[in-house]
Length: 226
Image 1 (tube, rainbow, N blue to C red):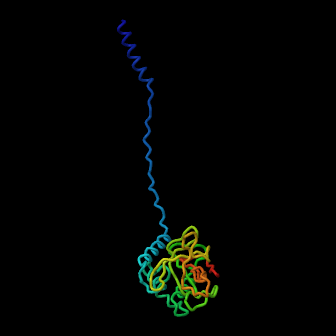
Image 2 (tube, rainbow, N blue to C red):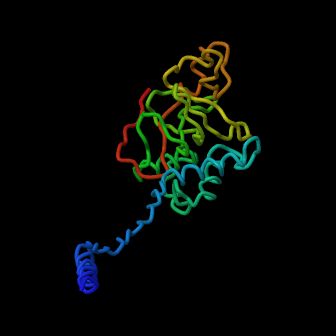
Image 3 (cartoon, rainbow, N blue to C red):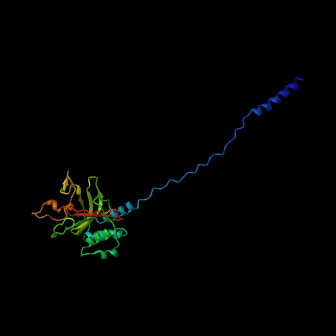
């Protein structure tokens, strides 16, 4: 009898123990979708400007282009004609000066920039730089052009241009228009020889500066008038 009661107790404990076990539901693992990292948008304007500068610097200390406008025309052609279309340029001549024609076409296409500091790849225009020409303030008689390759925080603009048959780098700084050298740094270069009867600051690039021209259209057109 005792054996029967013991066996019954064991069976009861077995079923009771199974009933007390908690059944834990295992949820399916969540699938986390990994979103691809968006690539930063390419700054098309910066790419264009960098290409212009790289193209221009290939001809440093050479005579390619033969004159200032010829040099700009060469770089323009090799950069995808970003400043102007070569076959349109002839429409904008008002004299035999190609520099003025480049200025005219960029003015028409809203590519002249304000008196703010330029960006690399901009054109820089000068007026009345010819040796026998007298400077007339705000005349827009464009006679020289170069390409901006660097802009310093103090406002010094470094530009490459063809002058006297050679492509070289010079400086322009309208913040210190009357100075050639400031704290040992060249901030303004001479654009033509200065006769003895003329003040030296009147031969600096700052004296002849007219405007900048951008490879892409600009919303603001405000020509400088010195």
